[in-house]
Length: 323
Image (cartoon, rainbow, N blue to C red):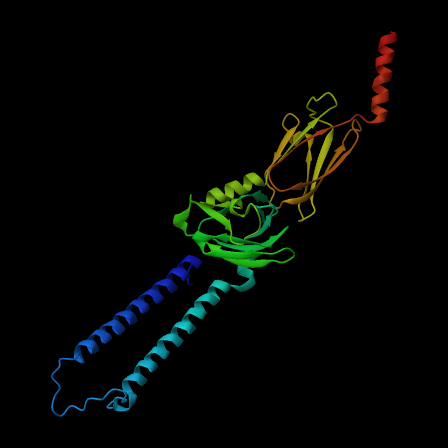
């Protein structure tokens, strides 16, 4: 396990910085040494054969030093290329578990559109401008665009992904557990138009428990049942909730409502839902509705008396008035 993207790029930077400093010190030191050793003192030895102007110097001992320096340099450069390529392959694909690991991670679809960032989690919950993630967990990003070319980027996480209309670019990042509670800036790295500089967002790094609580709050539905006089209805119906994205289907009788209202918190998937309210005593007309759950849902449904019941009530009223 090589850690986060930040760990990888910092490691590459430190290795290049260290080797660069070492090579620089050796080259400069050797240059200064030779400059001092072969300085012109104006006192040549009697047996020293000095070259004249335009004459090539001799005595290089077959170029052993040159061959040795080129050989060491080649080994260092090739080793760096191979090592760096392996590190960048890990950045491209962490490879710890393959597709199954990605499926178990938090997946978010990012869309750049009209100089704003829109986020959709793999459970259907959506948010705008703010991407909330749990600290210490791997996050996979699928980025695209709804208008022109953009580039999604989080500088502090060393993340950059193209956002192109009709295409998806995939990348990942993982925050450190110590970053919980931090807010980091999201930017567009592609010159995309007049308001490019204002196309920013926020990465909210949360404690895993806080993130789970936030997500549970997003996956909450509240339904209120009223009659035509806007009074709470407490009996005579059954509500059925069915998801089109998963196998969730549950029914709730009027007895499970509290004063005509119920809060449902055992939802695990957003997306399209069908709601059906069926009368249990024939007093009301049935109700059918459909909505798209992208966050907390609060719906109020008004029940209408069915035609037979309404006619009967009018007859009773009229009879009572005649008496």
